[in-house]
Image 1 (cartoon, rainbow, N blue to C red):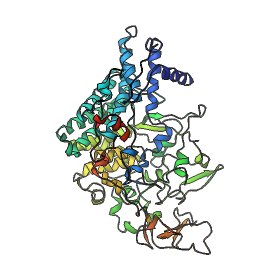
Image 2 (tube, helix red, strand yellow):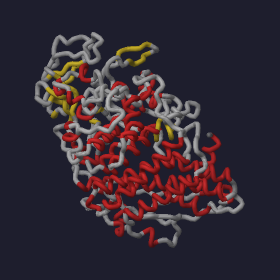
Image 3 (cartoon, one colour):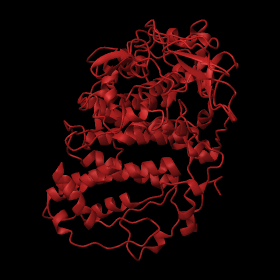
Image 4 (cartoon, rainbow, N blue to C red):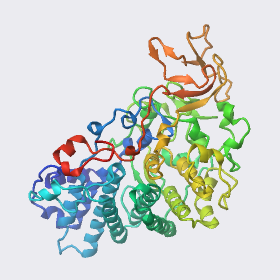
Length: 591
């Protein structure tokens, strides 16, 4: 590993990265890199910096519909403009294109060169996929720019069709030519990781084209959906991966996110941590700090989508609207107890287990996430986490396959059982595992997807939201489903029946929290956390309230406006970049 870092330094000197709007610089002395298989391997290792690292991966859903956070994301603020935008950077692309242009030494066997070109094209597909998600149309650059390439430097953006066809060509090449089929560390790109990325890309594009009818290319959606299903099926048929079930329905799911080494059975690609190299991340610090992190908390509307253990909707339960936290979390999909603090969840302090109910220093809604965190409080400060971070899981492949087939209208009962059924069985759910649903869940439809009448599509989306929560796919899902309006959902929390009434959230006999207005009750109950839900605190309007003033669901930031218009399906190109190259033109609505 240390040797590779030294090579990265060498490569940074050999490969000159540049911004799209700047004139490039030529490079020399390529023989040391391109004259041996080891050189090619070490060069392609430099591409891995494009993947999310440990810190970035655990907080990717910080802007999503199902998390309340302490500050409105800038993108959702009415004042957001092209002046605030970012992401129009192209250095990684030049690094890739430089490799592809010069990996031509005939002394190296053709299959070896093709393997490393496949890895390079995997990352070029990944790079452009991220750009399309963010900006829509972008320029396609298929070579390292030279000083004479002013027509490209100051050219227009290419069409979405051209970009996506080019991405597909790259990822197809990667699938066909990467030779490694498995990597025990789960930290390197293999053939089946490439197929996994292809399924992700093609599902995104197929559904984006289907639901964004304004593009005028909905007639091509099924091609992409078929490609997504086919790529996912290749991974499924390979027999390398499986759904991890060790520890049973109450432990297996969370172990995927707390284990020091990647769970090789299910994790296909991971950011591996290494204490000796000080390669650690800050998930505990971010998710358990009231100041460093975003105090990110699930909203009740999303928690309501977790099924009962018998496979029926929670919102079919009489009185669910006013059910207390301690009761509403019982008898649910076992992933819930592995995703938030509830029930008998414990933390560890100096080797001693202590009760771990939701703490309102860290949560606005009461639904406090634990998915990426370790139970030992030692990890709560600074970047000390050594748990590996999954970047691609076999569970996603099953979900990609199920959704693509559901969108095509061809998902069979057997395919449902081998995808959604398997995931729900791991979660302890006992009903509805072997056959597709035949009835629409009114809550899921009315609150989340009112335009969807197919119960199979609805249930696949439910499953995807729950299984992949906090793994960085939610915002892209909202974009492709054209459900940006969900970003304006009320940030609601658990139900509070009355003021100044201490609540025992985990039924351990210890009162945990009470809500009040005005002056804190005196005498206060020892050990109880008191939360002020007055309309005003001093001269400032309070953002944490009860929906019906003195009772009801907790709400957060109802006093602030979150913006969403059709223009928000793409970020604006940063203003400085449009000024440098007016031929780019701005995304609609951001002028």
